[in-house]
Image 1: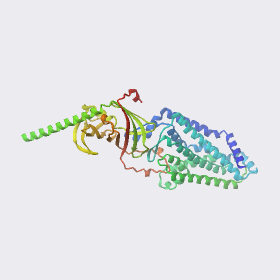
Image 2: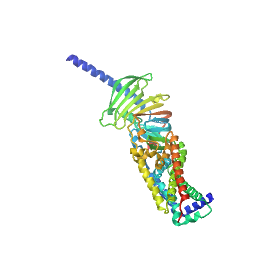
Image 3: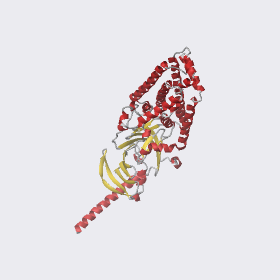
Image 4: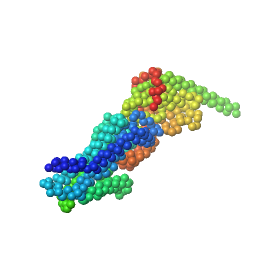
Length: 280
Length: 226
């Protein structure tokens, strides 16, 4: 019953025009970034290596598909949550607003199964969006710019990763990006359970993301202690996969914190949905 | 008065003789370098530079005198900006510098003569070059280039099979590293804090293991056009 209902939920998601906004926006954004880099990428590269170029010369094709995927993932990981929340924030509250939630609750399926199927459908949608982002950023990027060593600027300086040691990093990197977006999706579904209109959960999700991002970026003593527990802090944990050596323990701790967020939001959503008076 | 005059004359004469010797020795070294019109070679580059993490990489280098140089590598290869063609180019113009003999030094059981080459022009990019020369073989064993924009570059040479052409099989560059500032937007990582970024080291080394020299086989100028 859960799987059948999940399929129904996916059909409902596919039937809504807003579900395609994410794919369209990603295609447009990534397309623009790739074309801009193709036209004027050299100046971007010199910005990255400028500090070193007085003493050293960098030889080889720095502007390549691997760098493009890195740049795109870095640019979009903060903005894609909006595209996810646009769909997942509507999953429960949208039905409540239309009055179909009440009808669903009369069917021989438990409330937990109803919400479970919505969470699963939301996860599948998030996965497909991440997969599309990976295809556009990594696949199209490699097609347009070719393969090459990856030069990454991080807090420790420059890391140059050989081309044959990169693909697995992106595999796990996009996996971590999916986990981050899944946490956002679960949060928006959790907010959606508390609301009877679509706008509230979507805007609330974005407000939380913006608030957490600001708290995470401020070097204020009182915020430093809470920064390690914020969802947005760990949305950038994929970058650690491009360190040398890879800090496995740090990445695992980020995964645990993201999983904790997912379980906590899902738990709150189940608790609320099972006790909710469905009046509409 | 006469004694003082004689002493000054002797000292000046002595210096002149030494300067002449230094100039002759340097000319011999440069003549030997200039026997190489062009070359290509395989290199393995190992860089140990503060704030840069890079595994050893392989590349092919091409040189054509007096100043054409190209690196072809499959991946990213980091090389020093100074020290390849600029020193040879500088030394090939004797009117642009003066050279003085500055002592002797043992480098790996080889007695070397230290030549200090000083640029005549006050605004020249290369200000000073110190050369430790194996006078018997007319080989540069080590050098130190002081530049206006890139600081100091120390270079140690080792020779194996290409002694006749004065081409080294190993070159080790020691370069000055300035304090690099990371743009924060490029360095966001939850597992790294900017406070942990303390690196006191001020120099880095780049070691080149060079093999498979192909000397004076002719390389077209168009090959060096970017």
